[in-house]
Image (cartoon, rainbow, N blue to C red; front, side, top):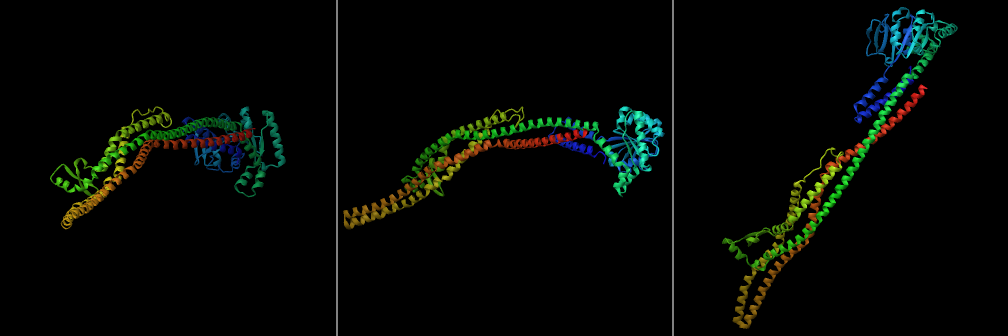
Length: 596
């Protein structure tokens, strides 16, 4: 294919420009830069313009068919008129009049995407069109091909037409001696020598002259029979080599490619600076988020340390509350309680100021001011002692949360938050309310889990069960003392009475032992629970503090992921741009080598 070297370079540049356009779109670059790349890409598609001139019946159509290997000038496609025909690519055959002497012909031939052909009628029949051709098409042409017949290359009209071509444009002129197969090699040598002398005499320069047989070249390309021999005999391989070299070394086209590369490099350098800036911003955002993460963890530790004294103080309050509840339990576990059931029940039945309190599932009549359970009394005692302290802790949490929130907005302005973002002014009172509710709930659950009433209930029930035997033991003791006195006298009565009293005393001691055991169980449970309460409160406090400052993770974690992703994307784009710059440098070197 003619001009393969140039079109390969152009295709490579087109690929690089497409890649540059893709980077610009991916990074949301400005519309002006994208438009520049689009214009550069579009300008690469500008076809070469070949103007073919010659007299009638010199074989111009056959020559063009052979040159491009396609019968695009066959009858019905190439109108047989005296007009100038401007061939360009189109989806279907269309002839559109442009001027009275010019028609545009669209042909679905692939080579017309890269080459536009201006085919002139015979120079001996278009005297009036000479000026239009020389003024309109020759100046923009990349190559002017004068086709002569080897049988008669001296037609005056062709030479007269050449006289009208400006000397500046003659550098793009070549001579083609068509139908050379009709002459002997010796005759062709004579003709070529004479034409060369004539050209030097008339124009003071040499034009490349190529003897060809378009018929054989077309047969070589279309029939495929003995292709190499036909092509060698046609002389087209030399002509095509020259035209390909001319296309590949076309200085204006190559300079245009180099100019496109320079503009693309400027855009790449500008884009590279922008990406570097964005990467730095993303890196800074990652560092800011990391610092904010660290500060959040430090703030959690600082807040927990502030609350530590409250935990210690609550432990002391709990011990004092336990002593208070143990004192109250002394009334419930007093010895008289084991013997006072009937009296208290009678009083309750009479509507006195006593009522039944429940210890576990067993009813017990106690004075009205003692009707509340031990768990409830312990909870009230602890609330009275430490309630204000934990409300103060809630205020500390509010202040610490507000302080970190302000720090977060101050450090993250412009990255996590808009540049005009204002930090919060007031704290959230809901923090204090929820924290107090959680602490109250924790203390309540803990106290209820102690089951103090259930702890003393078995001892109290056992004591009452044993206390019932004391009255019954007194009757046998009295009867035994009376019987002994009757039989043994006063001494016997005294001994029997003493034995009876010992029995009654033993029953009383057993009752007292049951009460003491219940009291000991209660005290042991209270003493053993102090550390458990502290641990439970510490866990709840840590949970609340973590949850409170964990709300900021909803901002930090997505921001961290976005910043890291953006940084990685910018780094990958940097590598992409670096590779594209290297490819442009290599391509520039190849184009410069082709130009030289």
